[in-house]
Image 1 (cartoon, helix red, strand yellow):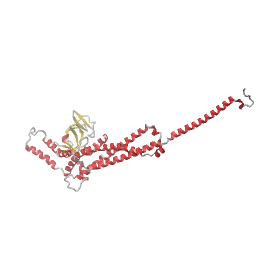
Image 2 (cartoon, helix red, strand yellow; image 1 turned 135 degrees about the vertical axis):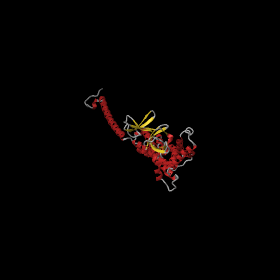
Image 3 (cartoon, helix red, strand yellow; image 1 turned 180 degrees about the vertical axis):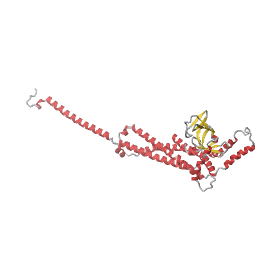
Image 4 (tube, rainbow, N blue to C red; image 1 turned 30 degrees about the horizontal axis):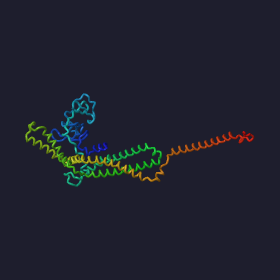
Length: 385
């Protein structure tokens, strides 16, 4: 079950906002706004991000320095593979004796880029007013993620459970000579076991499919879901404001008017976002929060259904074995061909041995007669007085 939990735990519905190597992200710009990038490496408190748009090739948001001279330029290629570190600084080699030094960007200044969700919103859109994220759109996308990422691993758990049951009973039969010496009986029992495995596996898969069908319609009474949504809804905006303001306002000698100007700049950039971008951000937030709730339910219920499958198997096989009639047993309880051939050989040997003994006994009997009365064989001989 560990592999199952790991597999569905890596799905888009659960990891939608996780920052890892290769993730498309948005990085807060040093002069405001956000820069598109792709994560090159992630560490405990920071990440190194490579540019996506050529205009950000020399961005100070992503790099502390670019086109630095480097004597050894043998590391040339994709940035994801050709990173090097020196005294806590990370570099990417460009060739021609040049390298760029990544900026160690704090994780709070990075968020996942939700723009890939725009296509999903368009594909599942309704006729409702587009400035609101429709529940139908959200439900359809959740259902899509469950079908794509969860259905197959869930059904695989059933197949693996069935395989374990099959391996277990076959090993048990190998140690029971009273079964293996009767091939017909062994075939009958194996058929009963296989029928029981197929039956309980089919029932388990049906139950899992029903479970996932239910989970395709989002539902929860968990109050923490709504609290998390409220807390995270404007988190990136809050982080951007903190990023613009920097440290303590007194230390930076900022005035109320300058603070107001910086805040207005942040809010203006947020206002300029398109409806599609806003909806994608909202959808990512809802999927992130709700995905973790439904993940907990599924990662518990699917293994429970497989555990129930093993209990049903035992009950099914017991019932099936009790239903075997005496006539059926008489029909299948027969010796193997090899055993029958061996028995025929031994019976023939016994028959020949019995004939030999009989002949030998006759010879002994005649010899005794000769010793007792020689006249039986020679009439002229006189009997002893």
